[in-house]
Image 1 (cartoon, rainbow, N blue to C red):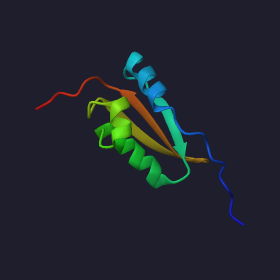
Image 2: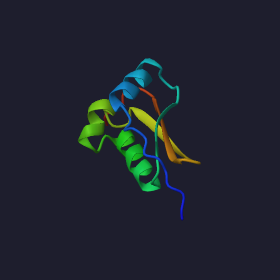
Image 3: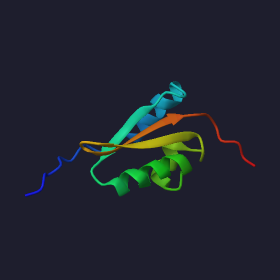
Image 4: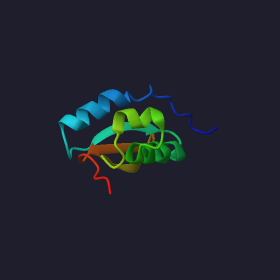
Length: 88
């Protein structure tokens, strides 16, 4: 039988976004996702604010950078606040 991953509690995005805003340019682990696809969707939503539940914490679009890394527990999303996005 395959290894079964334990479910982690959901990330507290409000708390993480607030911490990053007070510590600009410092990377913070957002969460680890068992499915790589979920991690990439979350990372994209943080960067672009294209999901309402993410935009209210991580807006405006472009204010945060993200990166993903493969870990033993799945795929981990890290993010950092880089400042307000400049509108064209």
